Image 1: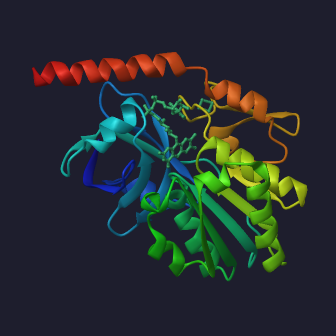
Image 2: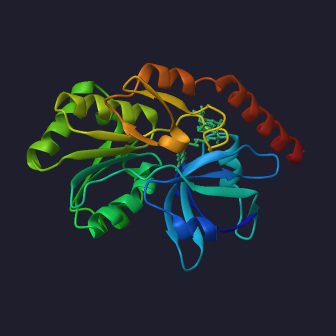
Length: 280
Ligand SMILES: Cc1cc2nc3c(=O)[nH]c(=O)nc-3n(C[C@H](O)[C@H](O)[C@H](O)COP(=O)(O)OP(=O)(O)OC[C@H]3O[C@@H](n4cnc5c(N)ncnc54)[C@H](O)[C@@H]3O)c2cc1C
Ligand code: FES
């Protein structure tokens, strides 16, 4: 069991959870994730490490309040316990020393990319950060991110996920203004990962995406997180979550993510019913 120290609403739909997890904090690396079990009846859900403090033995997670498990986490109070946190899991992305890197984060992405921005800057790299959000009210951690980014840009959903050419033009412009830019890392909703990969493929700019397939055990045993990249099969929990956005079989990836949609809807309806019963 892990003690909750803070649950903070960052923007309307995103929360920060600070929780005691000394073993995770001791060996965390930027770009890794943990599996969180909210309560004794809960499933395991993967969340990226958004920060950690080795001395205090704590980790920070930033999450979108989406379904049953994340709703349970959003409702926790300081002093409460989460059933378990396993990790750190996954492989940190391989980034050449002193590289010039574009980090693109939407939704929970700016949180999960924060440790990468810090690590890159501290290793002598150059960070261009592009924060994507539904609108200005959905941006968070701007000051924290600016501290480790030479260039900080924002783009809003209507521009970014609208007509494909707009994101393409933006990426081309960023590359034009930063000719040494050699790598793009993207974290956030699957559609953003796809759109950025599509845009960077045109100009052959290497792109690693932090995939978020369904995960069950997080240990490479169940096969739930299987993805195909460059014609080869990988398990995102042990081989990823970072993969080449230009080699991924996106069609298969999107289809597999939808596999439990009706069960997820039913679980949310059940949770709502339980809530209203308690209120009666
Ligand atoms: C490596 C990795 C890192 C992630 N990091 C973050 C993060 O830092 N912050 C964040 O908000 N979200 C993150 N996600 C997504 C997060 O795990 C899902 O949003 C969460 O599991 C939803 O659970 P739920 O019960 O609240 O919603 P549900 O109603 O169960 O599901 C809503 C949607 O979330 C996805 N999902 C559901 N269960 C899982 C699961 N076990 N594994 C993966 N996706 C699932 C499905 O697409 C589903 O349609 C990450 C996913 C992966 C694979
Ligand atoms: S989550 Fe089971 S193999 Fe990856």
